[in-house]
Image (tube, rainbow, N blue to C red; front, top):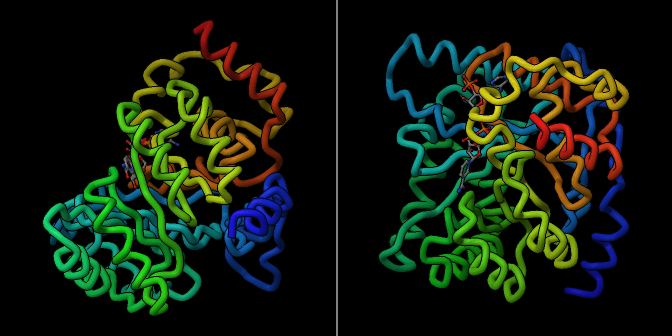
Length: 305
Ligand SMILES: NC(=O)c1ccc[n+]([C@@H]2O[C@H](COP(=O)([O-])OP(=O)(O)OC[C@H]3O[C@@H](n4cnc5c(N)ncnc54)[C@H](OP(=O)(O)O)[C@@H]3O)[C@@H](O)[C@H]2O)c1
């Protein structure tokens, strides 16, 4: 696969497409920036949804807030949703809300495995995820934080061959795992990696992002806001005027466009539980992304704060 896939990947990287969603009445979704998943060429919107705060159980009021955010996400053209068994009841809450809103068609649902007690336990966990998410097919199954990856990846591959999982990958958000992460990315055929990358934490760009491009793996960026912490640093500062040249009106858009502007990045999955954050973050899926000189300027600006 490597040669073909690598060549294909090079053709796809940077092949950002402004895709018309044509004929669709969803407000704001007429045009949205998308990038290609290297292993298939499938296009996905560059803004997805992180749901590690969706584990609200049966709380009716909290579910209503999340339902509004999810409805808006769909309305604006969002498709990729990242969840995990580790996020308490997030999978069940999402499964219920997606069914209630009747939006499963066209969504791209990603979840994870984290079992460390054998292949059978991994398989059982994936079956539970199918049930909670009310999805016979999971679009992307990832090994969470590399937990038991040696046993888990073969199970993920089996499910992929059976058509129950469309893509497979690994995740981390911790720099101390990068060495092992890099080793796995070098030796295993993966459709996706998920990793933290932000103006605050750029280490992934040293080796892992270029390697992902070489290996033909899509890159899902987590924690582009440092879990929200970066807003504390930039919050009171005025957004530089030049950020408007690449379509940024807010700090969130500035941070997202920086992360997704890396040539190897495919999309980012900001955690959003509030409707107005969904609106804000989708601003980053329009216009254009910063080029390398503009991204260097973003870094200098951030470092001087
Ligand atoms: N190892 C792994 O696999 C791993 C690790 C970490 C994260 N993840 C995934 O990545 C996703 C993102 O990570 P994260 O949620 O920890 O961090 P994040 O996306 O960097 O930050 C999320 C925080 O930013 C806030 N926020 C979102 N949009 C905003 C805006 N426009 N203006 C101001 N604040 C805004 C959110 O608030 P509200 O919630 O109030 O909207 C939330 O508090 C997770 O949800 C999860 O799916 C995976």
